[in-house]
Amino acid sequence: MNGNTNNYSGCGTAACVRIGLICCFLFLLFLPPLATIWMPKQDFSKVENRKLASFPNFQQTSAGFFVKLFEQYVSDHLVFRKTLSYFYNRIVIVIFNKSPLPGIVLGQKGWLFRGSEGSMEDILGKKTLSEESLKTWARKLQGRKNFLERQGVRYLFFIAPEKESIYPEYLPESFQKRMTNRKRIDQLIAFLKKNTDIPIVDLRPTLLREKAHQQLYYRTDFHWNYIAGWIAYQEIFIMLQSWFPEIRRLDEHSVDIFESRFDQGDLAVQLGLTDIFNETERVIRVSESCVTEVKNLRNRFNNSSFLKICPKSSRRAVVFRDSYFCFIEPFMSECFHTSIYIWKPWPNMDSYDHEWMKEILQEFKPDLVIEEHAERFLDAKSIVSNEEEFEYAKTVVLLDPLHGFDQIVAYKEVELKEYPDGLHITAGNDPGVVLQLEAVRRQDALLQLVIDSPAETMLQLFFKYRPLDGYSEVNSMRFKMHPGTNELTIPLKHQWVGNPLRVDPGTVAGVYVLKKLELRLLPSIGG
Image (cartoon, rainbow, N blue to C red; front, side):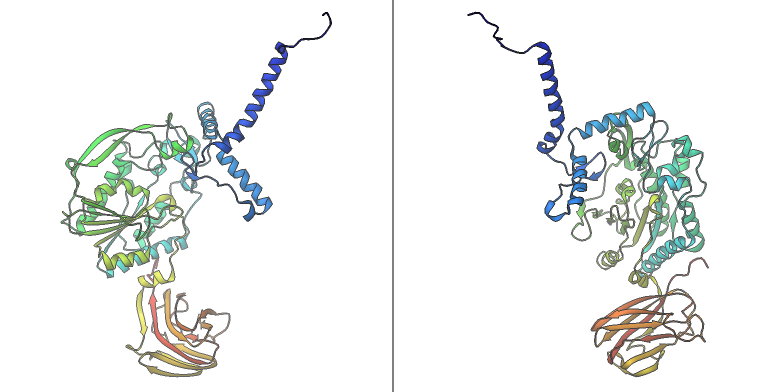
């Protein structure tokens, strides 16, 4: 049968190409989101050294905020993200000679530097320590040293220098032209040496001298290496041996040194370019270690704390540290019978913990406490609780049933009578007593009151700047009191100390029992 009927057994070449292109386009369009849904999810990115966003809960999140969290989730978990980042980072570095990440500085001759946490601002002089910050640091460290000294424990402080402090010549030329000659580490060490008696080990002169002979920091990581750790150990040991002549010192015959490929520098890993940024490191290991026992102290302190035992030694040491001390610890553990290492990882800026220290003093009875800080954290607010500072301070007034309450006199609407449990203050609705401090030296201080209250009320402390001034609401502080025993630790400025202090125990009539009043002077810093 003849006709014009078209018989299609397939498609024309052009149509097939168009269909193929459409299919490829749809495949490429839907592959990333579908693969993102089906592929196994990661919780942590080793490249960026951070926790990845989790899928948001719509029922617990507002619609607008859910969209923002969902965008973060998709951005973090998009398939091929790692591959795309790799090629992007490689192109930016190789072709444009720039760092693709704001937290990393691309230096000269393959050296990488940390650009975050204030490191570059410090080297450029944009971050300095104020006089008040220096005094706060000094008072905190001096207080710790004094407190431990009263327990018969030696105290040592040192700062681990950042890589740019030892190798500034490998920074980009644009940084070198603007570098400052006085950084925070210079300020703090100079201030501590002038105004305190804290034993300090300054590692910079030795490291700057030794870098001419061997590499002391990783090119691809912000840490120093085992060679620098060995040098730091030797410098610290000089001071330790003056205190403990009997402790064992490692020398070059006590260790083995070998070379190893190092391709896991944290800066290189963050860039995802460990194939480009890798190096050979010199590893130092103790030949015949005396350490027979290692205990994790996660149940006592945290996951980063541990203890080592070396039966050949007799002394005990505690080290409050950060990651820099990892390169010193293998050598230091050979010197002491018991070595306790405590580290509060980021975002904590200070690993020292006073409550933990008191536990350790009671149970382990250490001979030495070492406190180490990374240079980049020196601008962190040096926060110390009033209770911790009170432990450090020197008692100048102590009133309790044993010592009596002679320096307290009635001011108004009170009757005072001493009993075995304390000073009973029978009060009206607006009571007050005066603490006479005329004989006390004018110095920053802490006043601790242990007082029983008959009800929930407010204690009010009045202070004077001059002896003849009257008491006023402007020059006063209020503290909440609960029924039962209350312990208040109150900071006093040096202008107030030496003048009579007025204490109104509460606004509720009844009997208040002052069990203890103690005044302690804080360490005097900077004249």
